[in-house]
Image 1 (cartoon, rainbow, N blue to C red):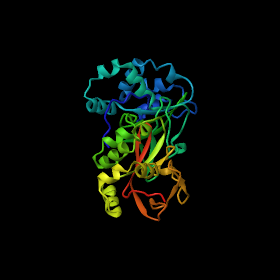
Image 2 (cartoon, one colour):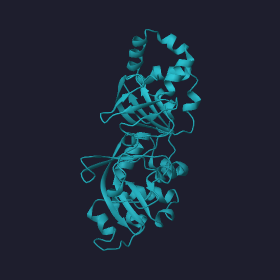
Image 3 (cartoon, helix red, strand yellow):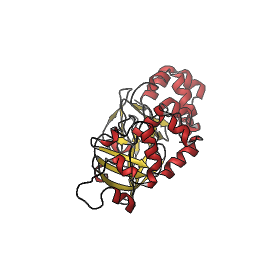
Image 4 (cartoon, one colour):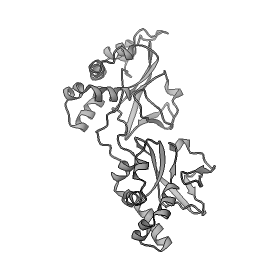
Length: 314
């Protein structure tokens, strides 16, 4: 899903580097790092834009004390962001609220070395929102921070006197659309969007949440119409049935793929449950099986998982 930037999010601070220069800035092999996160960044040429951003957002004092974790974008990461947004560096640095939101989205309120990162689970930065770290081949090999795309962690566990820094190759941006707006932006959910509107559930799914939605594709709805022998118009006209079916696809909390209770009943907003096995197959109340074909699509008020069959309660 392509993320559009109206996102006004928070965070990042300080620095990092995988290079010898950065290691020297951190104090080389000394047991106790002598430089704060900000000072490490200031001594690292590849973090010069980050330093400018931290200064412009007045975050230097904040990032010089306490115990923090910073996912620090390189100059190349900032250059890619400017190209993505179609703005100049000067314009970004002049927008203090936006800058503060973006920077603080990269900062955790405690020191978390990579070995202790909860892989696949939601991580809440000090600026709000969430992201997750996912691993391919183990944390030591290829580790990625995922928000609405993939940002690779290219250097890890750079020690500073007030925390630790992990270097990333892309600026992280939080989700800026709620579940309904996210679905509206994806053509393969057009029937789902019609159904949500017909059932009067738009406002509910635009609420604070957080929610988890198992979202059927258009093909899933087409298969349901054939299975039931009804037209789309007839389905959308039956508000009671539509509401029952749609709320059976919603959980009253945010559950990422890594948090799914495999093999255990999962209770929905509708009141009935379904189960998910280790192969990511869902069995509904009628012993019908659907497959999870997409997971962890982030929204500002929850997460969407994509299913290839409409689930039906009893």
